Length: 362
Ligand code: PEP
Ligand code: MN
Picture 1 (cartoon, rainbow, N blue to C red):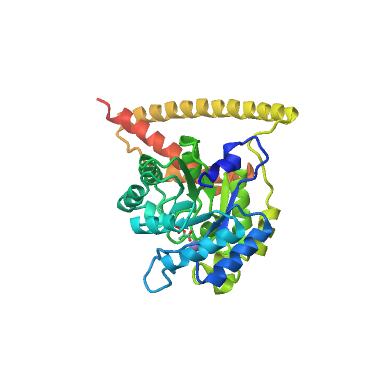
Picture 2 (picture 1 turned 60 degrees about the horizontal axis):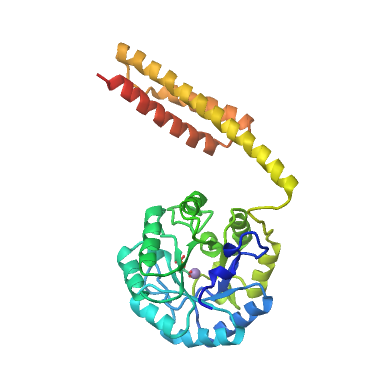
């Protein structure tokens, strides 16, 4: 039972196994709520692990902060009735101890804990010599090193089965998501640590129900190894995260509507076509880099010229002119303004650095 992740698609990518599905309420509230939710989830036949928050790290005091240790026997009963392994968030040594005592199979480190190396270390120390699965959520702020640091602390404690949960990053004033996914950060972590399964938590990314399916699909398209989705028998009256929870029946619908893709295909024709297109992409990328190199050489020449004539590097009018021209051109080519601005920002910075070097060389 302990090695939960090895039973998933992650352990055998070529199999038809679907990603690991973790579901359950944001918080355990009462024995009735836990059991009713767990039984309904088990009935769908689509859930692999039962989750529930027992200790809730709330942003501000005064709201429900979790039922505490007395909720653990309810989970234990739910496990007995459904056969589903349990996942619970832990943030202190005492919480680890209690969770282990009541047979929790997967312990996860929450976003508000991953940000704090002292807390992560405390959890890691409490886990020494324990043979359990540990999942680490991304920190609230978009800091990859902090996320990796938490992984390293837990790894050093001797935990063998480790996974990651991508739950999005807090970004001030963002309206579309509760926590912006910033997919590139999770992808970069997957690239650096391909041995760690990556699970997406659309519930905390979205913060509301209507976009859960789309975000879950996006994660599956990016070859994630699992999904964690909050569900509750009576979501509107949930004691925490009411807006983002769905009934077990709705969860089943969402899972049914996802198109499950595989990273690899054994259809030869498909692979040949894919290889051809990838070769084209590589060739285009090479050309773009060659052109960028040429562009920087021209920038250096301008730098020399400016130096001889004692002119500043930055001329705002010229820069605005480049941007406006490119946004218009890009639009005709189907490139978004957002992309053009990001691209030119990077190109411009590189250009300025090159000119700076040329102009200040003795
Ligand atoms: C949760 O899973 O209910 C939770 C508190 O998540 P996070 O740590 O991602 O905020
Ligand atoms: Mn929650």
